[in-house]
Image (cartoon, rainbow, N blue to C red; front, side, top):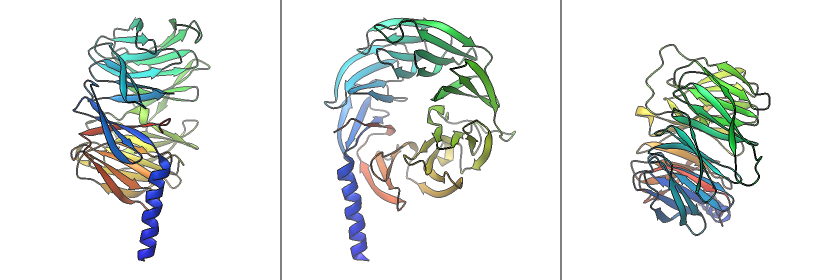
Length: 364
């Protein structure tokens, strides 16, 4: 038994060494990012502004951060040096990176900013609405207007060459009440709503929109934390959608035909699919903030439940090793679950009020 335990420890340790992954963790209240390299907390990058809704994205060797108070920050993820920053508005909610631009969806000044890759301003699109769910597809820029129940499609008339020149291509009205987030699946732009009993699917090849009914209880609960539809999970032949205001994860097939509602412990916020698409991790809000549950994507049953000593704000599966990283906000740590044996492997301390966890895939 001792030999088996020793072999297991050596195997786990070897996976840390081989993985050589670099994670960037939003430190929610410190205007900073923590870095975790090869499974160990290494540094803090300061000066990232209000990180209460901080999001990090990478494109090649470029890293970008968007802050809640409307800053976009460009940084080098290898040297961890800040290279540029630009304030688009008083409140920004999402962004996308194109080949020759960065586009930012703003809440406060009700606009979408187009910047070059070094964050120099190129254009501001006024919408008279808070804007969410910003995505790209080919030469299109797509976003939803929360206040106007509208999906806007802009086209780069320069088709990706030189500076972008976005012009309104098409708008879809009355798509649903209060769109709040969206995702892209192939050519499908999928958008969720606060109050409508459907989600929307815009086919960007045909430029056709349809509504997909959701099957939820009549007495939906108060939403304490918005389920980010950017963290819907699509894998294999299934689509997993966190319900708004109900203790369910909804399952659809790839044609958006309803399969099943999976009853969960709490109100789901994030669904995160494992790299092999065999498991789905689900996080919750309210009294179930400290819990994550693991769903088997074949049987559609909950197979594991983990409880922590603080609110869980995010999870991220390792791409290279059998580990699931969990940000435990109240106790300033990242918990690491071993995803073959399904036990709490270890904890990474001194990460200040962690929330979002992001992988730099080009890290060395």
